[in-house]
Amino acid sequence: MFSLTFMGATQTVTGSKYLLECEGKKYLIDCGMYQGIKKLRERNWDKFPVDPASIDGVLFTHAHIDHTGYFPRLVSEGFSQLAHCTTPTVDLLKIMLPDSAHLQEEEAKYANKKGFSKHYPALPLYNAEDAEKACERLTPISFYMDLVLDSNISVTFRKAGHILGAAMLVMDIKCGRKHKRLVFSGDLGRKGIPLLPDPDIMEKIDYLVLESTYGNRLHSEEDRSIILKSIILEMVDAGGILLIPAFAVERTQEILYILRFLSQNHQIPNIPVYIDSPMATAVTKLFDEYIDLLDYETRLLVAGGQKLFNFPNLHFTESTEESKALNDLKGPAIIISASGMATGGRILHHLRHRLPDPKNTILLVGYQAAGTRGRSLMEGAEFLKIHGEEVPVRAAVMTVEGFSSHADYDEILEWLSHIHHKPAHVYLTHGEVDAAKSLAQKIREFYGWNVSIPDYLDYVELN
Ligand SMILES: [Zn+2]
Ligand SMILES: [Zn+2]
Image 1 (cartoon, rainbow, N blue to C red):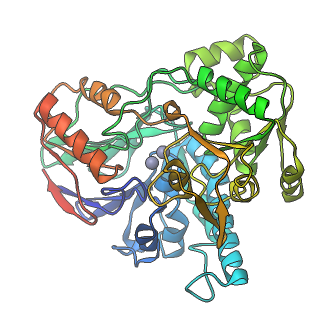
Image 2 (cartoon, rainbow, N blue to C red; image 1 turned 180 degrees about the horizontal axis):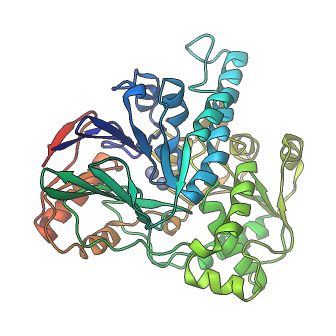
């Protein structure tokens, strides 16, 4: 017998955390931070449902903060064992966890200075030192290697195609004389997007914890490079700035990949492009080290002597001074900055500066969780609250949908079609209620499987 407790990403997309218990051992699969809606963010501050010191190991599907961002807190609260993840995930986390600590320290400092926090003094969830200690726990494992956690559980990491290093976890668990296979999809990627390999196919699953971010939506079939090109050309005409809030991991590189293509094929004029995110810069460099984990087309390109992310007039800003100097930048130009949902980071200063001018365009290129500034912009907010100030939105706000690194419901159903036998149960997580419900309905209709949508702290015994 083993059990699962759903500690996060239940009927919401952030805070992924699942506790697996088997024969007295406890493992945490993902250790994500809640982002977005305040009520959820406040959960980051709750006492952790089990004693972190009693957990025997952590496994990360991938590096995104909604799957890893709580980890330094877990370590500071007493977790002292290993955290297993793929090698690129280790490298990404060594960049992302310190950055997350820094963001929180900055935010707390700012809140104290401006006095807009309810709590005084406002505190970060963890600091740089906690993040550093958390990084010391990270242990790399290669894709497809068998990792034996204890006498009952072994796990392999298979490619999820979601971001660099992203895995689904295949856990083989001994139950008496039988073996059961529990799979965590992590965030499921898409087929045929630039840079990344397609998600691995899975044939046998007994229990599945499946993401449902786009459980009620289909991605647009339109060619993203064509859309991006037309937006850039319009922006050039208006003489404004195209500001792109983009996740430092993956989305920024995907956009750079397309911009390189457009630039090289003389589809867009030679305008300056600024990557204003030290994290995005570091991550972009990391891609060069993992060419072998990228998709076939990309490897072919590199083998042919191409640089992945390089074209004339591309600039990476490092210091805060360089970033601030961008305030004086006159259009046409493109600024790409993080975070992707405008929840923090340098993008906030750019938004504050660029939103009031109708010449500018804000381009949203990824999932915007409920409660984030990105979502408010997407839904046509007239003002945006940034650092306690109401900033008027006069710039054009556009959304390109196809940029998602999550499978849509068709792609999820296609991925499920490879499973040979009916799984005993499918748990849908990592989706807002409507998305999860809609996907549950489709899985029941198409395959007749048992599907449920767990609630926060739901506990299930599996056999
Ligand atoms: Zn993710
Ligand atoms: Zn996620």
